[in-house]
Length: 448
Image 1 (spheres, rainbow, N blue to C red):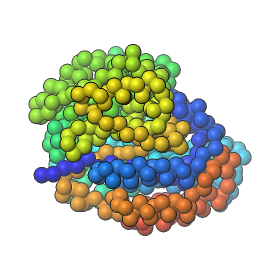
Image 2 (image 1 turned 180 degrees about the horizontal axis):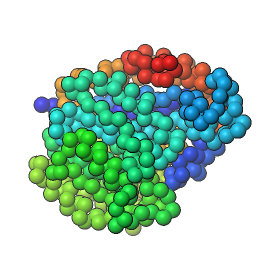
Image 3 (image 1 turned 90 degrees about the horizontal axis):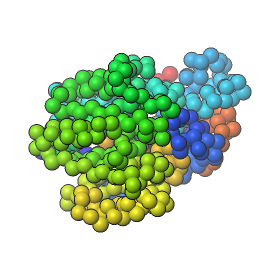
């Protein structure tokens, strides 16, 4: 039976701004208060989706969230009409308004964790929305994320949906940014790789000292249980606390995997040899041949990796079985990284080609190609059950570009978040988008 890996890219929302909200994310903090261009950001993302579709990869679209989040502001004590709530928040607590205006849901790698049907006990594709409770501006996303996921994958015969884990620090869950899957082919049972930054209940695991570890071991274990994964198909690994303290806030900033290949920095994990041996052994038992591509610190430092987002790339299997690496423009602009990639593709390893994309708007806010996409492995009959409205086509690309031109601003500063008209613009755009993508009513303003 044919199976595919489909990438669902987050569509950048109309309130895309540089609020500097993500402590521990160097790019987010360093560009705080800069003026953003929501229209350009959305078009850069759509351009990547179209390019991958044109290359023959299965591509989908993930809708953004309603922002400003007036309901969240009301829950914090701001009262009055929507316009009055926004005005009061702007006057009394601008950081809260910025948090409730974030377009961070564009990073759909954080939206949820996905387990394909070949791995799960009941033979369905399982989704667990991430609670993202480490950051307030992201912790308010999961209710809408869950509704959007259900609208995209609605057939209960093929898809199972789980609510976010308890929103407490012990179960901090950042979704697929700390999860990948290895397999011989997408339709066969694989090995799911969960990476955590700390343990909530076991003091034997060291913790970072400067920046928070967002993902816990206990959250990873809970998701594996919810998805009905057997021990033979799961590997847990701890992220190196030292690299978290250097700005590696998610595992997808220091490693990326696909198929039988793990592309990783030598400092990515603790107990690396043990982790690689377990991955190799478990994948071999499922018919696969695990290949680890190690990037030495002597070639690319952790600082270079963080600045270039080398590992926040998309590793894609081409029709001939070789792999393509999708990287941001920042990789070409970093001499050490580009020299390494040039050597890599001249070799006989599994990664044979690198393609560069300009994603400056999202990169400046701390997210690259891998952050923008959610990977879902689907068998042919499951792909047929996906809501067709979210599947990228040339016609949908044209429609969404026109939609962006119609509704998005080309300049957004922090002071603009106080404009009540921005909320009206966002709701008008999203109401039209739900019709384009055939999602039904998924936003709070549609459900009121």
